[in-house]
Amino acid sequence: MKQGCPPRSVITTLLNTGFVISGVLLLTCSELPAQSTTLRFNPVTEGVKWNFTTGPEKMEIDWTGGGHLQHFNDSQGWEAVANSSPHSETTATTRLFRIIDPWQGERSVVVHVPSTYKAEEPLPLIIGLHAFTFSAQILEDWLELLPLVESKRFFYVTPNGTRDAIGARFWNATDACCGIGATVDDESYLESLVNGISRKLSLDRRRIYIVGYSNGGFMGYRMACRHSNLIAGIASIAGATYNNPGHCVPSEPVHILQIHGTADLVIGYAGGFISAPYPGAKETLEIWGDYNSHTQMENTQDSAFNFDALIPGKETDITRMSGGRAATELWTMNLTGHLPVLKSRGGSTELAHRIVNWLLEHPKTQLK
Image (cartoon, rainbow, N blue to C red; front, side, top):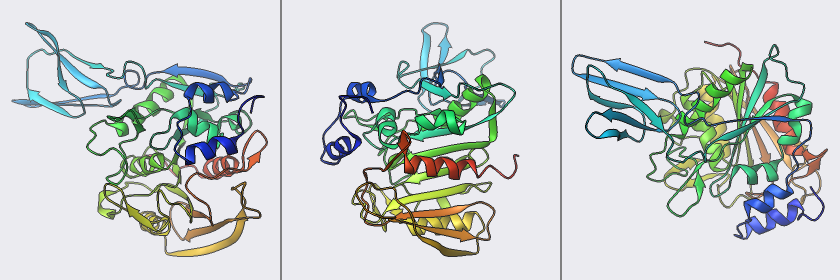
């Protein structure tokens, strides 16, 4: 961290006690490795995929990106017809459609690329998803994945969720958290983000991952459920999957890493209720164990890691499912709360190092 900036422990304390920290301050205090290069684009309007299904009376249109659909009316010009995909209307002989960005570029992203990247070498992608009320910048200042882009060689992007009625950023994830009544299609937005990156960079389609914290973890599970053909694996920090297993029908195995503190008072380790029930950390492991065809749970290693800088010794235990088609694992951070002060390691955090290593070791077994 730069000279004159508050240490991570101070930032964490302020966030835990309800203070809102200026994004300008966090941006100023964030180190961008000089080696990395960047690519900027807007997933709402770039990388969008269209699909038209036309019948004798009705036509249906679906699209990615989460933008709003307009069609052209000869008498009134461009008209808004749908805020989310899909849309159906009476079949017309000729009709012009376009996607507009209602957020006026606010959901544009910066993709961080290793300086040694070459087009002939496909690289993995890690997508970082922030918590409710947080932002991409706050997530990065806490977890510090960016310093690892160069040494571990992956593309990295941290998009922002949209804002609710009081201005808080969120992801419209599962029924439990946290877009109550929201219609924004974040699922489609993230799909378009991946498609846009794959058009601009040489992307290893077998290694596309999500690291989500809290509400971002819930969103990671939604993507694993709905886009298991796209997502190789997720790391969910203090998130949870759907409480009703019937709401999640993955077509392929997905590598799952659940990370959760036993003293979490925001998203309970044992489960809880926000706008709907959500399962606990161990139940989440068991649910995905069933999806991934595991046979049993094994407590494989106690006191494996030390991630929390305020707890002496190795507070984190590992529990794995065995016999399945994809890795399914729980890291239990004993006595740790919702937003721990993370132990530093080489310009990043110990947790970031371990997450990235775990994800990159687990590619998709096959592509369909």
